[in-house]
Length: 282
Length: 304
Image (cartoon, rainbow over all chains, first blue to last red; front, side):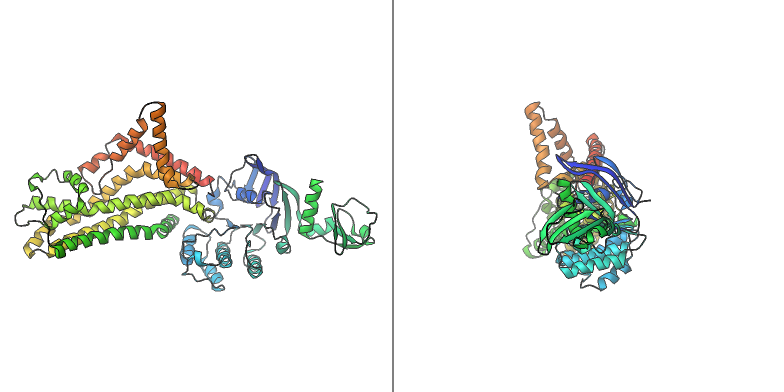
């Protein structure tokens, strides 16, 4: 059974269609990146999966439940870190741990405290005095101590410096992820998470333009870098001039066919996203 | 149960200091004024018409107390103990104890209004609503915990503070009296009945407050800014609209009838009769509607 199963999700805010027939599957033991520009529907999709917003149409199941109707029970199995600091700033760190311990059946306080011991966070301090980086560390410590089956991350490292960003993803990978758990993550910093994803979904105008395992990208897409105008064997998804020459990205073309025309490589996610969006606009 | 205790503790952590400061200020002012009057100023000169006291109309004195509660305290402190019968003494002390309870009731109403208006607005304002909603707690449980904190937990704290203040005021008055007179005051104070009186009073008050609490929470869950203005402005605007369009005042009359039923802080014949008024039961129905809508709005709105 899929951890998340979404079919034809539609959600509009007035005349703006935030989700326009989104299909998505997340299996157990996968780390799925939801990649898209601002306004592509990423946050709306995540909120729908967390039961924070209803849908106009479509079928959505998270861990086998309707997230809106069963949000209370579902949140015992799902954890969430948002793009803005959402921890209550008026609370002391130790009181926050007390609260989560009281309301969350899976919370293991020892795990949380062990995580915090490895940081500079003073449990007696109020959340409001913590830096943005500490704020995220604290939230991560809580999430790791919950051990949810699904972790939803909405731009979790926004505004953090590179050290905290790196520590964050290391913490998620080493402290949380295993073959029984799943992660759904959205971010603008595509390059930063590219190496940790098992699957990627490109979202644009509320639709999934592409959805496939990371391992399939190298088999499906090829980037050709060449110096002069040549006769290309197929219509590329996109072509652009760079300092190192002309780069074209192809879909479904064997590498051998292109190898004699220039340098062949696998496009990164950012290049691929731009190419696919451009093709969609063409 | 453990979860609900956690929710109530969360409310206490957020609002406890507000409650403590409000009650502490009233407590300090009461004791200071009593001590000053008795031991420093030394000019206590209050006359009560003791002939009006009888066994059945002690509760009836509460209207006088509301008009001038300090007068009640001073009257108790200035008791002519030897010239009073036990019944008169009992009536005077009852006035003093009620007089001590009134400012605590007043500050409780102010604090309750403030907390109810801000509880669901502030969590959207600082985005913490997303964290609260990431916990396995339903919107109905959240709304219920906030309501029970204001109408159940906060009154408990107010009652304990009131009892302490009543005890201290009587003790202060006793200090100035000879031993035999002091003994009569302690006996006449029937102090052991005060917890019962206060509990009954605050229970009735809670029932009376339900529709107001429901309304304030609904506004708190909906308003993008200035929930206080919306909470007062909407009923006022609707009443005005009714009078302009239909030339009637049904809505404003209903609201005023309910407000006029405000029970006093201690149980009495007057307070108990509040429960017999159909307006109270109609108010409970209205409260259920407001609270159900509050749960829906809390589920629906995550930002301002």
